[in-house]
Amino acid sequence: MGHILEAQNVKMYFGGVHAVDGVSLHVDDNQTLGIIGPNGSGKTTFFNALTGIYKPTDGKFYYCGQDITNRNLDEMAGLGIARTFQNLRVFHALTVKENALIGQDHNIKTSFLDNLLHTRRFKAEEKTAEEQVAEALKIVGLEGFENEIVGSMPYGQQKRVELARALMCQPQLLLLDEPLAGMNSVEAQELMELVQQIKTQKKLSIILIEHNMKVMMRVSDRIVVMDHGRKIAEGLPEVVQNDKQVIEAYLGG
Image 1 (cartoon, rainbow, N blue to C red):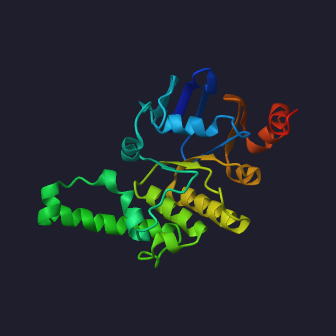
Image 2: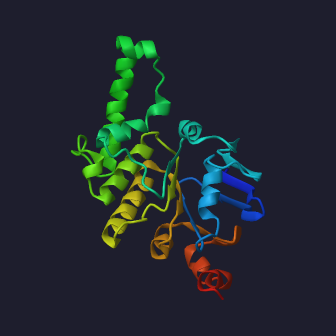
Image 3: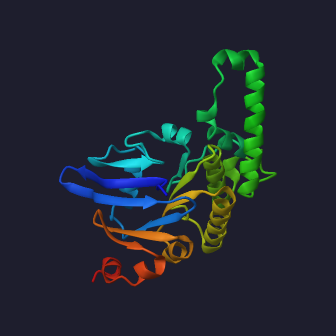
């Protein structure tokens, strides 16, 4: 079976700094891959290279066998890859529904004229979008909150809005960058349970970067550990947890 995503020898250099230094990894269908490592290990830089925010110095990314190196996030959404960010990216002045609809943009095939004249194609797309929003909000537990202004909602619920927006592009691969950042332990637990449910229900693959080691060990099928830009370990959570090099990276030897 081919990998849904594969990174081959990815390097990301900034001048003399080797932020990512020859990292290869893969994730398979319906699998959660956790990427962990101390601060400054290169996890987020790797994510940014994968999602086209940075252009890798060297190496390739393949999605379902297709070279996606240097594709931007919009193009990736069209292929079935969605990402959430460590720093919440929602539109605070818009409603929950409006925020979710933004995730639909790349799917819209209607022209300006279709929109202006409210053609049959426009109406069909509008109906599909409505159905998808309703489904996404139901999945993330925000049914009935469609018209709430996002800025007035608790932080944990705003994170769910971002997740709903990611689901709007019907992804096969979900990239979660520190989804639990800024959350209390109850919110964090609820959100990770929700992510697990979504994975099972939608048969998604997930790549997850997270500082919360307890969570990572519980939800990841496999774990890659990075330190100083390099991959120092990979394997099942229980194996990685007891790896001497990993313990040294976290505890400073």
